[in-house]
Figure 1 (spheres, rainbow, N blue to C red):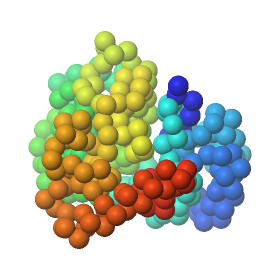
Figure 2: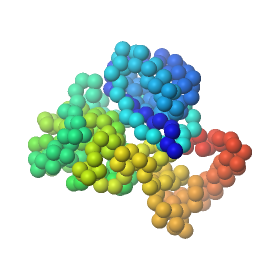
Figure 3: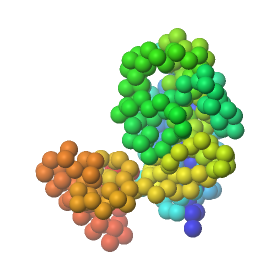
Amino acid sequence: MADVLVAALYKFVALPDYEALRAPLQAACERARVMGTLLLAREGINGTIAGPPEGIAAVLDHLKSDPRLADLDHKESWASEMPFLRMKVRLKKEIVTMGAPEADPTAQVGTYVDPQDWNALISDPDVVVIDTRNAYEVEIGTFKGAVDPVTASFREFPEFVKASADLKDKPKVAMFCTGGIRCEKASSYMLANGFDEVFHLKGGILKYLETVPEDESLWEGECFVFDERVSVTHGLDEGSYDMCHACRFPITEDDKASDKFQKGVSCPRCWAEKSEDQKARYAARQRQMELAEERGEVHLGQAERS
């Protein structure tokens, strides 16, 4: 039975006093028995938390008591068990790291497109559709016909744009990401670099999968999420992927059947990249976590990787 509520949230808003917000927010989450990660920066807030429904409501109430966050939006889904092992409120330079100062969503962003209008937009032949996520995310699912920038991190997105002069061959650009935050910042970057008609999916893939019926969907595959569920499908049901805790990439049952897979140590993707010393350390860590689990405890290494 899925009884753990998961809330993904973000908002670009000027928070010059973001450092002072950390301790009260951490305390509010701990009182509410909520776990996950929230990032605070001068440009806003971003993160995912999970816990009992009343706990999630209490944390959201705490956040919305700040007038700057009163209209904070969030997306909900359910998990069969707690997908996080501790609560972390972190201070960052950016709530999603691009490293491009001209990308300022508090100053300008593209046009938001509701999920029910997304199919019509991306089916328009005058639109180039860009997946702003990383390559390993795109690999397990994306929208039909979308361009894959083949990036390893969001920091590489500006270089992709600069190297892709043909993006301006079509008058409109439509972008999407998991929850909406990366494509919103990407839209600001595109506008600052000469693109005039820029659109992005409001609420991201998660809101689309939640609200658009599967028989009308243009989504293909599953959607990677950054917690222990690994992936979700239409209706935000838990997907079929697991995770390699050595390289943090999604893996299939076929991957786990490979002789290059060892739980917590390696998978077919990273087996050749890890040294024997690394594999030995990972194996020792995995054994310690298994022993801790047998004792009903949480091992530090397990908490660190969540």
